[in-house]
Length: 304
Image (cartoon, rainbow, N blue to C red; front, side):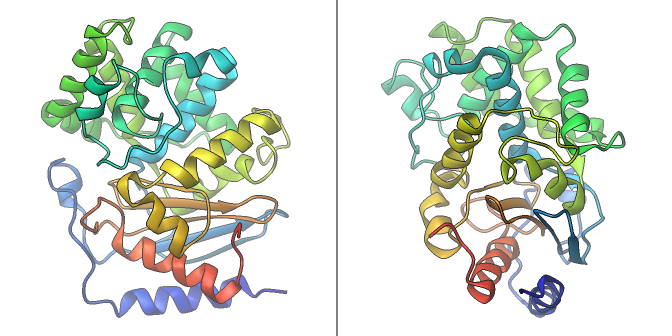
């Protein structure tokens, strides 16, 4: 039996000695305030045993990790119709790249890059009576944690500086792939990205992706088929234009965010979340990537 606590302690110790910790995403002013030295990791297994090290209980903005959650909610609401508006192919481009949108007539490559996530946000704005409140309730429900909330300062910070997202949304609108008012859709999108969680909360939230769509309270939110598809997207598209590298080095489905968080999982086994705000050149947490590579190397656990 693997001693996960010993493994996480070893990873945390190695992280504390790393000199090159990457660079913080200072193009979002609120994120620029975070201390570069932070590192946390939390793992939950199928039996809901929890293991942690470092700054595992400190909250951070989950950013693009939220795209998996909005996708999950939208799939639960409209099912397969979602794929009429979004493709499922890796983009091979940075998360905020727009060139493929014109080449492919306003159909985003996948729901885990910004244009795809904006279309998902548009779907939720259409489907929900109170989009921001209803989505937050969904997240609190699957995590069994009423304390999770938006970081309104981060949301406002993104709203002031998210020029590429405004460009993407208006380009999507010109192709008829945004049905609602662009400002309303982006207000929802900036709030979903601002969700604030700790590593522990993030791992608990993603527990349903290792448990066939059932959250930690054994309530079913997704079908087994939907979970399979979302996990597949995480391994092919979850790390922007570094998804292949993550699959090669780590071998787990996962999703990163420019707030420095990463969540990864092994179905029927464990879910792990890391946080370190320093990013590599591809926009993924530098220490988080190293930590997860070390985790799967030491434990010899991966999907391969």
